[in-house]
Image (cartoon, rainbow over all chains, first blue to last red; front, side):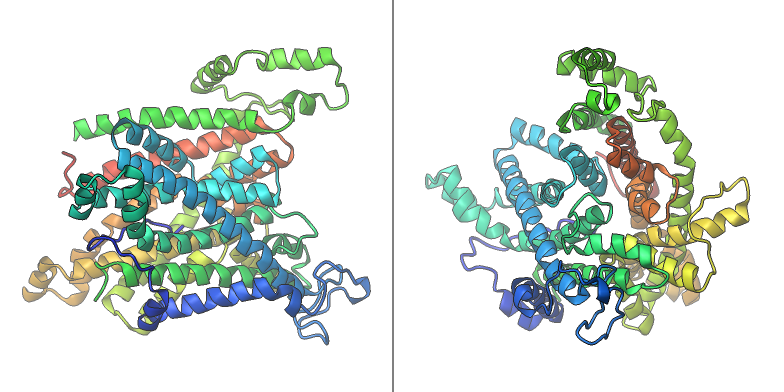
Length: 294
Length: 314
């Protein structure tokens, strides 16, 4: 997956203002488009109950297998007569929170490990990094599948598993940046003024970590959505009748010969969502990495 | 170089230990008692105790780990909880199908990625470049199970060009085997194609800007010769790394693709075993996946130095 750490060298001391996303979006078209797409997705998830024309789990057997563009059902209905567009819109309320929780788990746990490892160094670093190496020794999806297999198939366990899989990328990224920042003059100066390690980390290191972490958050959100879709497709994530895109493809593919849209529409929804996050992540990396800046 | 190889091997020991502990714990994290799965209806305390004794579950955890790892090293990966078949045997039986799928997917991805990535780099900003960049982004955004389903619908169900499902071993009937593996391999190879093309393109752009390329041009070598003979060889070094990792990750991709195409490989075995709560088999597949990935990582690092002598291991 394309979640290679993008290490952005800190150019100077503490940058107190948050990353000016809107400013970046004005300068970089990729960031603008990515940000707009992600914003639309969030809006869809937020407004699904208001904008959905029907109840996503209400069945209408008399109206089953309606093709797209049918009156009252713009994207048709499924085998139980449930409105496809409503299920797609509500599906965003599954995918985006999963990505959010998974990214949060990865970011908090991985970030903490990276900070401690990078700042403490020595034996702590050696031990923590071996644990991270062990996590990295598993192919990402295999680890997620193994964890869900052990914890039991459910959406909550899928979120936890995907979050755990995301830990190493954050740990390595944060550690690398901390190692880069630690010998810098502003950190050494702050330390010699008597600042405690907690203060140095909170006030001086974390603000400088924001840019590379932001890139990683966007890329790993894309991965999380893809992984959740895979787990649900395999029957290890969301369970019926939850309107989940991956699970809709699983059901839809049995009707492929006659009603291909049942699988194709949710597939397009997943692809657009993952593409939006990948585009945003890639463009942010290009815009923020001084080595790539023209 | 020898020191580097030794250091890498020594560093691998604690990681391999942690990986085996993780895989071992998989079965213990699982809610429910394996004895209950084996016994089904007959759940008398005596029967449960007997199963615990047979499986060694009555011993302390660390003793269980030592016995397990000793058996694993000696090729005994335990027995399937549902079929009672040896796990190692069940995996080896399914491995050829997975390897065939993985190899064909890899060849397909390289056949598309290298020429397209090269042309995109040579003609930056052209239509081909834009197409290549589009494929690169789409390839990593579209789930491969969805690509599989679309391929089945278009090329198998509608156009009837390829058969759907079924595996024919390559050495039994090469032509039929390739016809059957084509669609799953294309689905599996797509993400790889996107990544390999991205790497080929960016690495080619970098190489084409180097002095020796200009020298070759100045000496009168044709552009075609410079690109394909002088530049491509060096540009492919980073691609080798990523391809090595893809080989190590074959099982990972196979899990989903094999489920879509009902391909009788190791990936599908893992998914079926999860639903049958056959944790010894799941454990075996995860162990194999992790170790092939680790070995691939190591080999890639070593091969990289051999391919690019400028890299020093000091």
